[in-house]
Structures are given as structure tokens and as C-alpha cells.
Image (cartoon, one colour):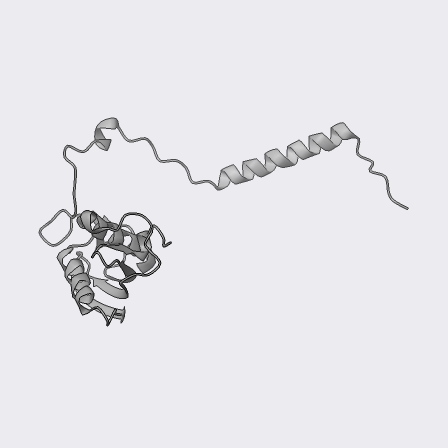
Length: 174
């Protein structure tokens, strides 16, 4: 025999509302607090900053990253900022001219100390040379302040036009 529900409808709605509000309160408690609003004057720079800001020892910028994977986004955005006219806009075509995977070692002040190819596009030595030149000329990179030094890996997606995207910031592929 089936047991009959003993809760009357108003009580059932009250329990459902209590459970929902309790769940919402728990979710709200898990959120990080919002940062205090910065004054409007602090948000507007006196002049736009393009690329790295040279300093006595290296980049005046620093990265708050605590892992190489987190630093990869800082490195990619740094390269994009310096090479805006060379970035392929939109989704990459299905067949690319070259794809390369490069390890970049950055010291504590943002200098490039080593480049190691994990997968070099051997059919396109001119692309290998251009990628290495692009990375070395982008120094100083944001200093990996919380790691001391970093070795990060990114994949270069190279179009036949000479424009590129990095896998970290790619817009995808058709």
C-alpha cells in the first residue's frame, strides 16, 4: 500500500522556500568579496601604455601568476600587445601553414633565458626563426614575481600570410 503524504500543501511550500533560501545563502557565502571601487582618477591613465615598460632591470610589469599555466596567459597577452598588427583576426582556417610548440624560460626580471622547441615546424624553418625572433624581441616579459623564474609552453598557430595566434588566446579554428 502506498503511504499518503502527511504534509499539507502550505507546509510543503514553506519547507521548499526555506530550503531554497538556505541554499542561496550558502552559495552567497561562498562568493569572494567584491573589491572596493577605485577612484575615477586612478582608472584613467594619463597616457595609454603600449607594450612593455622598460625598467632598469627588466619589465616594470609583474605577473601575479603562481603556476606556469597561469603565467602563459600573461606571456601571450604581452606578445599580442607588441604584435597587434601580426595577429590573425577571427577563426583560423582548417589548414595552417605551420604549428609549433615552444617552451620559453623567463628569469626573475622578465628576460628570455632559453627557448626549447617541443614541436618545431621543421618544414618551415623561416617560421621557426621568426617565432624565436618575435619572442626574444618581446623581452622583457612581465616578471614572474611569485615564482622567481618560469618555463611556460605555448602553441603557435601560423597562417600562410605570416599572421599568427597563440593557442592560449586563439579565437578557434574553422
